[in-house]
Image (cartoon, rainbow, N blue to C red; front, side):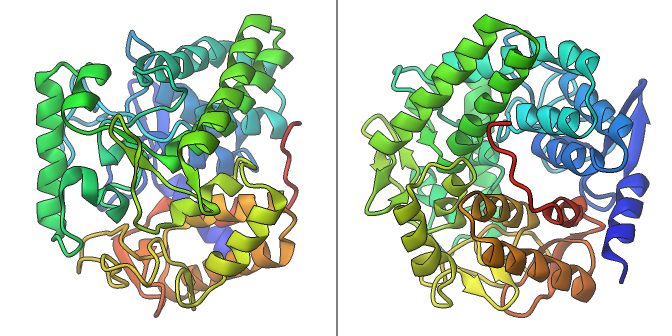
Length: 405
């Protein structure tokens, strides 16, 4: 199988143009809309061989930005199509997703320099990250809260079972119902984050805040390049503050854990989010060594024949087979998680381990095709077919980590 060639064909096949905006849908089968972090992944991949489309992807994503700066996690470009997650207003969802946009924009520029492109998207980027910092941190502790598990990008991850009062063996359908009810509750309080989080769901998620730290650094580089001193100061200052707060409130016993509520109660379920801070360099070299060899490469916890389990094998919620035909973040391998781990391993110099992750991705694609997720024990594909995240293997071919450049 020509993995690179098939990945490029899939991105072209899933390309759409609506109202003059070009974007890529994750899957014709189940996801006929535009998603936030999916489009960021698409832009990062397209930057290698089609920078014009990469820039168009991000412009399209930012075209539905709210007045307060929020960027919604779904844009319903084709409103006539029925869809499970039709929760939004004015053609979008009312939630956001891991804020990968600045990182993607800088990566597109790095590969194909275009100052005019950066100038055109910079105001929207700054407004989005200001929204997160100013509206999602009501206590001023420099940790950004999410108001729904879907904002983590990992909809039914068991690390959100406690704040949802969900049992480890909850069904996919029942888990979805809890998240849908949460949207109804947030709608009733007009998505006022401070009010909604106190009343319904308040999680300081490790993955979300890790992504925010690294993206604020990218925003700082963009602002510096464009000579916007105020924006550079904002980005660099808050990247440092959030990283410090994560160490203070979310770090214990050698790992970062998400927390809920005003008292920062740790969410103890072991998921791949333990490894996400490698992406932003938040572990010390000694901590990274212990984490990689004690957990990531441990067959009894996360290391499986076909990749990294998204939930430790030791957890009650672990399900290698997902939920039948439905996707699951309760064990199966996901390519986006692999990408973050791969980038993190390279950051710390674990080239051999990063190469192993990439090789497992290639093996999964050759075995099961471009599927939404995969059984970590058998390699069997699960969820949607023709799912674009598999194309991230193209970015993993570039083993040069470019932090701070």
